[in-house]
Length: 230
Image (tube, rainbow, N blue to C red; front, side, top):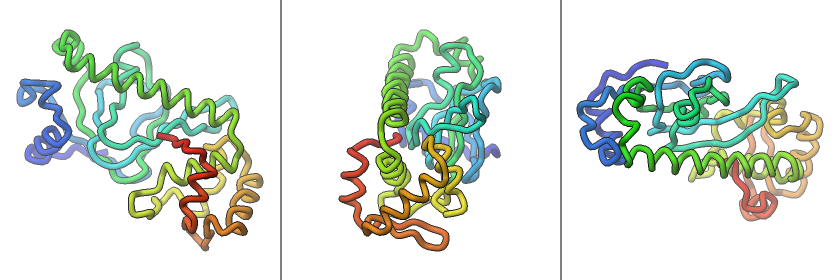
C-alpha cells in the first residue's frame, strides 16, 4: 500500500462517486488516497482497523477463514464499495480478509474523525446502512451457494464473477492457482479438476497452459443459475 499525494486525483474520485453529497463540506475532511497493487492484502482478519475505506477503482475479493485454515469466498466487490463499515459500527477487529484482485484505489477516512463528526450525519448513516444491508444479502447468498450448490454451479458463478466486461480474466485464473480456487469454493483440487475437464469437453470453457477462456457464455450463465459472488 502507498499513499497517493495527488489532491486533483482525490477530488476527481470524490466527485466521480458523489461523496461530496454525503460529506457536504468534504474539502475540510481528512480524506487520503491509497493505492494497492494487484494481489495485495488490504486487511487481515483479526487486525484492528482505524479507517473507513471507499473503493473507487479496481476490484477486491472478500474471504472468510474456516477452522481448517482454508478460506471461503464471500464476494467480489467493485466501486463504490465500503470497507470497514461493520468494524466501525460494531467496534470489532477486521472480520474478513480483503485482497485486491486488480490494482485498486481507496479513499480513506479515519474512524476517529467519523466518531467525532459524522455519527449524526443522516446522509452518511443512510449510505452506511445501504452498504451493510447489501453485504448481509451477499453473505446470505454466498452461504446458500457454498452449502447447497454443486461445484459446477459454484465454479461457473466464480468465473462469471471475475470476468471483466470484455471477457478478459484477471491473474487469479492462471492455472497454477487451481488449488487456491478450489479452497475458496469449498472443494478439493481433484474435484475441481474433474469439473474443469468436464466443462472443457462440453465446449463451455477452454483450458490453456496458464489460462481459462469462456467459449459459451450462455451455457456458463445457465450453469451458474444467475448467482454471482458479488
